[in-house]
Length: 178
Image (cartoon, rainbow, N blue to C red; front, side, top):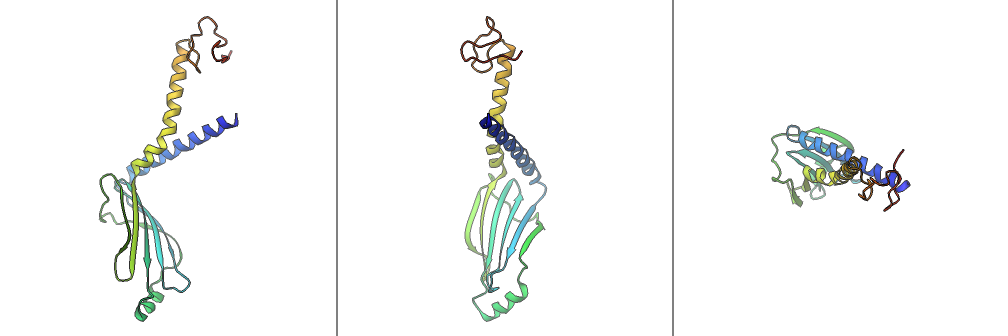
């Protein structure tokens, strides 16, 4: 009985994640959302930023790292320009370059400037919608099958004809509700 409750709970959570993914997918075509977290190393020479962004049907995780340890001038600039550690919500730039058609893209440690490198991985929202729809679809299929079997006078569990014994299935011992 506990296993059934756990399965039902996981299916319900999967359904909620499916609906949320579907809503975010639709929203990503007219809104550009970014949430990020900045950090500063103890020597203040290696600040970085991690962000999750949603736009044009894809969700991306991007990591920027700055290395100010190269020159003395850069070290001084690091102490002036360093972000405070914490979480940031940024209204994104809708004119930023878009991702590929299916939403898959990636690059790792790509140099952006003399001091900045970036890594990024992106997956289309449709992947999350597809993954989170599996369990609710399986539940819906079983529900519709059981409902059809009950209307036809069959056992909802195994499909045995119950016209002769309507209270109990002789095949699987399922007891019909009174």
